[in-house]
Figure 1 (spheres, rainbow, N blue to C red):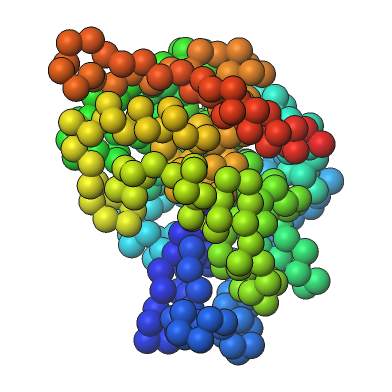
Figure 2 (cartoon, rainbow, N blue to C red; figure 1 turned 90 degrees about the vertical axis):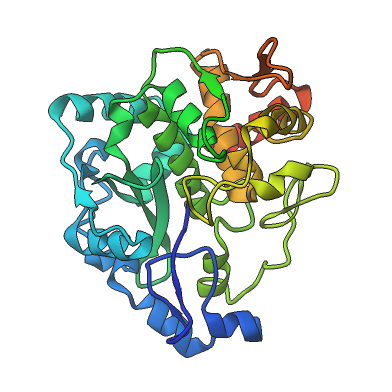
Length: 339
C-alpha cells in the first residue's frame, strides 16, 4: 500500500504527508500552484532533516517504533487516534533482519542508501505503508511503516485477510502459500518494492502526488506496461469486476458479495495481474509482482487461492502467477529489483 491521505478542500492542501491525489485547487486547474507545492513540501515528515538518518548504519539499526511526529501524522491521515508506536521484541527484530537479508540485491542497496527507517504502528490499517521524503536537493528517500500483527500471522493468513476485506462477509477466499513464512514478509516485500520504485524507478511514478510535487506534473499522461494510466488498465488487461474492488475499508465499504468470488478470480486468472490488489494501479501491480515472484520463484513456496464454486460443490483453485504471461511480467519486474 502506498501514499494514502486526506484532501482538505477548505485550505486546498493535503493535510497528510502523502496522498493519492493532489490539492483541491489542482484538481480544478490541473496543476498545484508554486505556493501549494511549497506548503506541501515544507511539512516536517517530508523532510530528511526531520529524521536521524545515517546511510552508513546497518539496516537492522533502523528498525523501531514510529517517531512521535510521524505517528501524529498517521493518526490524522487514517483518522485513528488509537494508533500507537510499537517496539519490536528481540526475536521480532531477528525475524525481520532475516527477511531483509533475503531481499533482492538491488532492493537491499537502495534500502541501504535511502531507506530512513522501518517503523512499527499498532493497530495499523492494512499491512504496511511505504512513503517518500526528500533532502534539500529533492533527492528521494523513504520510510516503511509496518503492522506488527504481521509477526503473529502467517503469510497465507495475511493474504487471505487482504482479499477477504474486499467482500461483504466471508467470501470463502483462502490463500495457501505454505506455513514457513510470517505475514510480515508480504508487507516488507510489497512496501519494499514501492520504496524501490520511489528511489530507483520501476513505473513512471509510484503515486500521483510525486508527479505534481517533484516533477511539476510531468508524466501525468504516461502509460506503462499494461496500463493506459496510473489506475486505468488497457482494455485488453481490464476485467469487469475490478471496478468493485475495495480493500481494508479504504475507499468505502466492500461492494462484492460472496457469490461473486468464483467469477472474480476467474476474471483475474485471465488477466495479466498477479493479484486483485495489484489490479488497482500500476504501483500496486509492480509491488505484488515483486512479492509473488519472490515467494514462488525465489523462496519456492506454493501460492494458490481457493474460492467456493458457484454451485458450492467443489472449491475452485487458482495458482498465483499461473499463466505464462503473468509469470513473465513478474520476472521482468523482479529483475529490476535485483540490479
